[in-house]
Length: 341
Image 1 (cartoon, rainbow, N blue to C red):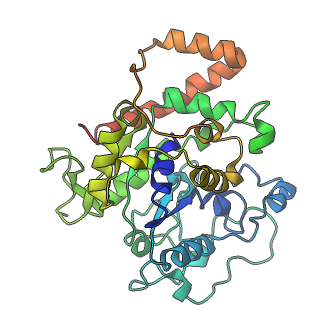
Image 2: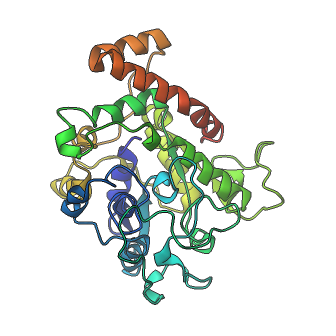
């Protein structure tokens, strides 16, 4: 996904506390990890520095940031909350005692034993799931957050991700193989549909006064506006999209948000992105969000495959092609809800 939107909101550091992809720590490395990537590599997990990170410790960190008088702005991946490969979800052990009324301040909860000293993957957990909830986060905790969604066509995002899992970038990222199950589109759609069915988002759409026929939410009417941003729309009309986003989220829009060219802004961005080295180098080399002078010219599947073959070889191109095909439907489904100017 495009990383530049969070740069925009990092410029509002006096009122917003931006947190960049914190839940990957628990998803990949901690005692409640869901991902299979490092399951057989305890050395890599230890070297990450996040072997003790649980979903609770991350929410605690966010709660402390939020208590400083700033609004927390979190950019993360839905897949970090959802067991991969359609495994059933149960509540993360560290959040098993979460109760309604606590709100976002999880530090008010008593500690919970996350797992016994046993070998093997920690998932499945010895906890119960919640009706229809596809995540390992309690529904009452999800209900305390305002969700918005950023999407990008898989024909752009998948090759970009693949590039981070092969030389020379793999040594920076620590991702030495490409996993199609980490694309994240299906999980994003699952989370979106769940929040919509619960009435936490919708029926109204950001940028529209009335809901259209797609927005029925089983009788719910009090959720925040559905807010989906397509990265291509953002790059074509950055000021308009960001202004619409600010309006729906209650953030004051200022044109200066689109520029982060000061030494302080650059340092803040590099510090926030430090733990995900290699994934955001292009974004880190930028200093503003400016409109593209020309829209991307559409390319045929044959043209794209030829480009991928030239860059990654035929086998790599086939993997990219197949992964893109597996996720286009999820992207197009979410695209119908995107902000339109």
